[in-house]
Length: 157
Image 1 (cartoon, helix red, strand yellow):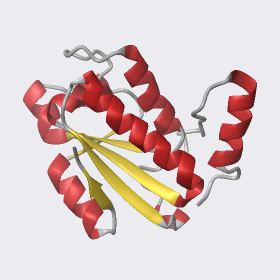
Image 2 (cartoon, rainbow, N blue to C red):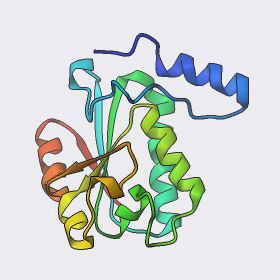
Image 3 (cartoon, helix red, strand yellow):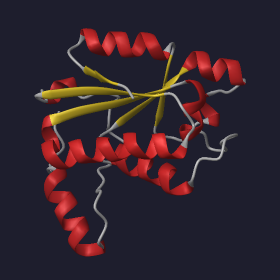
Image 4 (cartoon, rainbow, N blue to C red):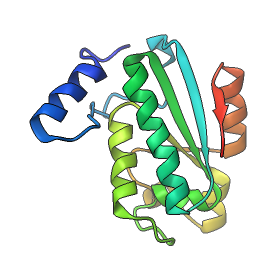
């Protein structure tokens, strides 16, 4: 079910009120994907490196797609391997706080962040080691495959 307000309208309000370019919507009722919203566009981004420049490029692209398509896009960021430190409460790799905050902001704006269970297992992590908005999935690559089978375009760099 769609949120009672549009992401675009809320983003405009927030930008006017605070100068921030990304807005939020409550994640309390946000599901990992919102297929029932019938978004026209669906993208899954692969994020598998802990390099800040790499992460920044992906999050920027995600933000641009939200700005362009508003409520008419479903975005999942599939996070695994070294990239999983972006979703850690206490990352073991140097992930700048600005990137962690940007990921949180994008999530509040409807972007889903899926954390690879295999990577978590290899690190000895549980769901408690992840930020609240991260959704663990059993196998990150399988998640990408299943999303593609549901019509998501796969983006990697």
